Amino acid sequence: MEEVLRPVVVLGGAVAITLVVGWCAGVALRRTDARHPETPLWGMLRQALVPFQVVLCTALLRGSYDQAHLAPGHTVAIGRVLSLVLIGATAWLVLRVVTAVVEASYSRYAATTRDPARVRRVRTQITLIQRVVFAVVCVVAVSAMLLTFPAMRTIGTSMLASAGLIGIVAGIAAQSTLGNLFAGLQIAFGDMVRIGDTVVVNGEWGTVEEITLTFLTVKTWDERRFTMPVSYFTSQPFENWSRTSPQMTGTVFFHLDHSAPVQEMREKLGEIMPTIEAWDGRDWNLTVTDSTPSTMEVRALATARDGDTLWTVRVQIRERMLSWLREEHPYALPRINTAPAILPPQDRPGGAPLPHQQPAGRSAADADTPAVEKAAGHGLEKQPRK
Image 1: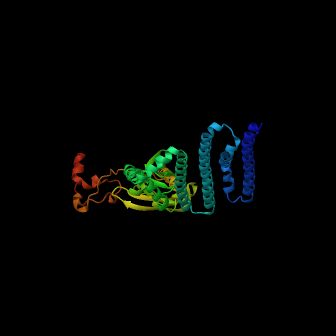
Image 2 (image 1 turned 180 degrees about the vertical axis):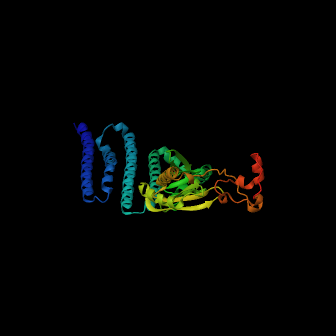
Image 3 (image 1 turned 135 degrees about the horizontal axis):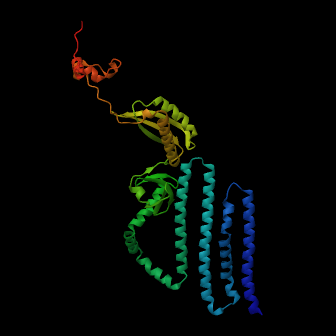
């Protein structure tokens, strides 16, 4: 009878204690979360209840399994399995707690900080730090699991003697990987590029979507993804449109005829800007910036809250202004001038007047043709004046 009750008491007691302690911890976290709604830490820690219960139950079984006298011929093997499960569950619990603390701290910081650039910088830093912590915890957990085997302990002791040589060889073999690793840390704490920044790389502009210790992903406006090594951003020049502020200023150029009504265009642009929802209302302007023998260059300037909305502002200004010019002032659009060239006075035959100086009903060709030749052309001779 004792051989049956002892395992039941040991196993049942471990499971019962685990369930009771887990229920009490869940109730305490819910009440604490209700009393402190300003921080999501306590609510996020509830995600660690399952690994906590696994750790507690495994630890109780590992400590009391010898008293259960269950399968005495396999005590060593079962004890080793319980040790492996305990190590893995502990690593799981540590990762859940670290994630909850980091996410809660970031959420509270983002809620109290009004500078989007600082929020993106902190987000990038904690993301990379979180990945480093995950890697360290996993390596330590795997190493601890391997050391539970006696054979691995002997191998580990012998490997320590050649650790220096192995480190040198590994460093040479993984030079690019280590370079990307240190570049990722430099990006995180050097504040060169952050998650959510608008950047231009290789002639393409997009938003930084993900940053890891080895690569960086940029999402373009047409939903393509560029995956690039982080070392690119520490060795190559690139544009960061949201380095300090996402606000941007854009331009739209019009090549028009010299007769274009610039003042009326300026007034029309002032009417168009309030109707563009993407415009942030900060500034707009219209000026003549250049002139060529056939056209003049008119620049419309407008602001937007970020690079994505700036594109919308520019295309709407271009579309509406060209439509208005085509309907109201078609003469302002650029055209090829095919009128006869006006010669300087010294090159005009007989000092003929300019076209706008011709008498009514006479053309420039008539002014340059002698009267006798014109009369002869009609079969008449010029009669002398009496």
